[in-house]
Length: 254
Image 1 (cartoon, rainbow, N blue to C red):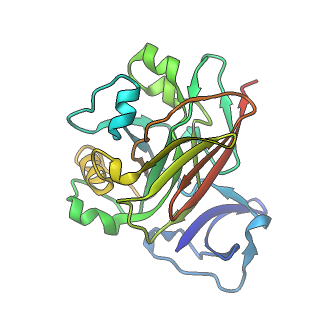
Image 2: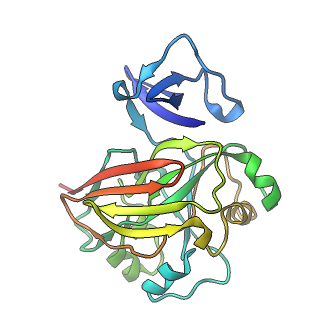
């Protein structure tokens, strides 16, 4: 099943997406999915929103060995975690804005997981049933500031640096999916989730041993090799097998 969050007539709602038609849900999907079958909406009639309202966005660095190597880093012994603020989220077809503080902003196409039920100190075998779904994510990064600061907060945390969407796929095995990032039509990243150093369910279990994951929280699982610069005028497409394509444009921050 595909789920979307959308806005229409000033109201934000969840819905099931099928054949380019949205059937609204009667409530948020975390306690079960109940459809409002009295109405359907064409997807072109609504504005899609990021498919989560997180208390936090937990990201994993250097979880693909080739990506770690391309940046001159070792693969860490344990997952390398950092946070992006929820204020950095933008939806499918939103605009990534390059801040004046940076001269090197890069794309990082990634698989993201939206948590469906609270997780704390969970075992990997218990994680799958607590996931609401999977979506596309672009961990936009001011690489020059990340290197300057050493820690990741500023380089990863600017407004618009977390494109996410356009939909959630609820019934998906995340273990071996093709993931591709194209910039202005040119493929720059091409990998598979099977290349992750730490697989998705193990990552979520590890994170839950450190912090409670709440319904709606987003876990971003790492990027394949091939990251590169973005400049004003670019378009960026992150495509993940079985999910779809997250598309955004790039402008300078004014």
